[in-house]
Length: 386
Ligand SMILES: *Cc1c(COP(=O)(O)O)cnc(C)c1O
Image (cartoon, rainbow, N blue to C red; front, side):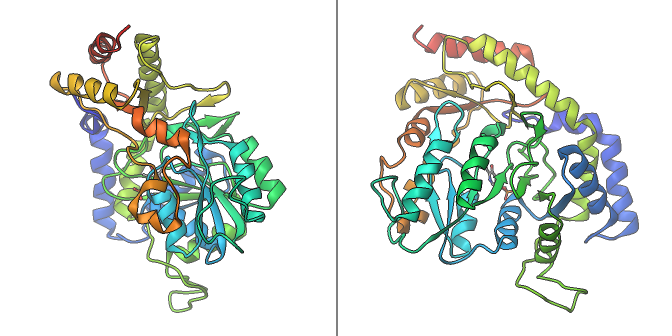
């Protein structure tokens, strides 16, 4: 059994894939070929925003978003510690300070009430209000990066209210949620800039690295396009700002165009697979909670085991039956060595710590067979102690 079955998908779209790749090899515009613009236009329409800017990875998308918003030294950027390292890494890379905010353990996403307290704590340099990084004095609260973890959008209405009240920019980390929805709008449409990833294992993945920024702000679109190509101005040899080499390959755009044709259908199939898991596992383990008005893109289907020992037992049983599992994320970012300089302590973010000890992701992809799901559920139910 596969954790993610990219081969099944490839068989379905082989003809289209080969035709698209062949077209790029024929025209030879490997950098900034017409497929990049074609993909940007198609995905901007799908998401429901004015602009999409393809780039080299989800990490670059986040980095470019922060650069377009002029985030740098002296700035505090709020985000969750229960995420992939890239979300906070880009904040530090630009010399800004990540300020972690604990999650709502039901959704695994940033808790808007805790965000409000964290902003107040930074403004007053008062760690009694909220755990703060050391040396936080004189940091300006500038932005928040909510993460749509496992494909479920964060609570953008509540986050938006806090952000508006305190003058924060919002960057949606939609790396896992492309295809997800929140109150009638698609993931990628939230905040000032949204960022997604086309890493192969994401809901819409390419055959290498790739990413995209989304915005409806014309000025931010222009800034992102410039940053993507070394801060380019009117032409290649006019440089108006410091940028990066962050382009999306034409070949990856062509591959994504083929995959995007079946993507809406795959999102529907993911809903069916998740619903089947929910039914099979209800009462045995804690299954994912999808609040009313939300739709997950189901990048991962993650359950909570009783505790670390219970999780290890479940993983061993599944492994013995040839069923792969994964743990996202075993160690929250505030406890990672890379962020030790921030001075956070174990226990600063108890919900993230608790989920890190218990979370377990099961095989999840649009082509997962019902029989395989039943086999997984039988093992989990047998081990659940109920
Ligand atoms: C995958 C991921 C990223 C980074 O995307 P890459 O394309 O791998 O650079 C950022 N944030 C989250 C939440 C992710 O899951």
